[in-house]
Length: 424
Image (cartoon, rainbow, N blue to C red; front, side, top):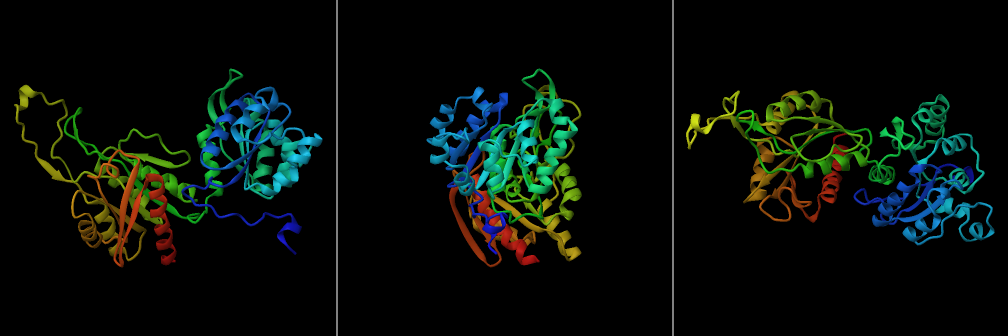
C-alpha cells in the first residue's frame, strides 16, 4: 500500500541546509488577528529567499489586510474563499495541499488552533491543513489570557502530539489589547528561521554541540582590557547553522555586539579563564566542540583594582603578561588521557603560512579538524560577513571558496556530520 493511499506523511524533499527556502513551495496561512499585518513581512522574507509562496487567508484576516497586498508580494492570487467557483477552480485546496513543502500559519489565532485541533475544515485554510501531508508550522498570536487558557493549551498539545505540528513563539511583551505577557506573534525573521529548521535536513538531530565564539577581554583595570578584533560572526553562524540542522547547541560567547540566536543555550563570558570554566562544565557531555572563539594567548599579570592614571604609571608603562591556558590544546590532551571525548574542531586565524600553521596546530593540539583562514584578507577576516577557509585534517586539506559566513558554516558542518558518523 502506497503512502499516498494511507494519507501518511509524504517523502520529504531534500533542501540545502544553507538555503532551505530556495525553490520551496510554502503555503502561508493568515489568521484573523491584528498581527496579520506582520505576515506581509514574513511573505517578503520567504520570497526573497527564493520560495514560491501561496497565501491563504481566513475571512476574518481579510478585515485586517487586503488580499491584494499579498497578491502583489507573491504574484499569485490569494485563496480565501473555499466556496468561490473561481478560486477553487483556479487554485483548489487539494492542489495547494499536495504542492506544499510546508504550511506556515501566522498568525495562528486561538480560533484557528481550536478548529485545527478538532479536525474542522470549514474554510480554505483549515481544509488545506487537513488535506496536506506536508509539515505544518504554527506561529500563535492572541491575548495573553486566551493563550494561557487551558483549552488553548490542550488544543496546541493535541496538534503537537497527535499531528506532529511545529510551533514557534509566541513572544512575550506588550500586546495590541494593552495587556502584557505571552501572546505576541514571533518576529517574522524568527518564524522564517523556524521554517528553515523544519525544511533543512536534520543530520545533527540527537547531537549536542558546544561552540565558542567571539573574542575574550583580559582586564588591565576596571576600564581597559587586552582584546582582539573578533566579531563573533563566524561562531554565531556555526551555532545557528547547527541548530537549524537539529543539534542541541550550547554557545559559549565572548563579548560581542551580536544578539543571542533564538532557541539556543547561550553562556556569556568575558575572559579566557571564564571560557575555560564554561567548557569544563559543558564540553564533556557534548558530541562535538567547535572552538571558533579568538581566545587571548596572554593576560595582564595583576589587573589593577582601580583605573590606572597616567600620572601614576608614566607615559610608557610596562605591563607584565601571564600566559592564558590553551583551551583547545587542553581539551585535546584531556581527551587523549581519558581515551574518549567529543569531536574537536579548532580554528587557526593566521596572517601568513596559514595552512602550515594550521597543520602544526592540528598535531600539537590533538584535534580532528582545523579550520584555517587568512585574517588579513579584506573579505575573509574579522568583522565581515564573508569568509574563505581551508579544512585541514590528517588526511589532507580542502579549500572552501569565498561565501557568506552562513554558507561556510554549513559547509564546515557537512564535514562535522561525516566525522561524527565515522565515530559511531
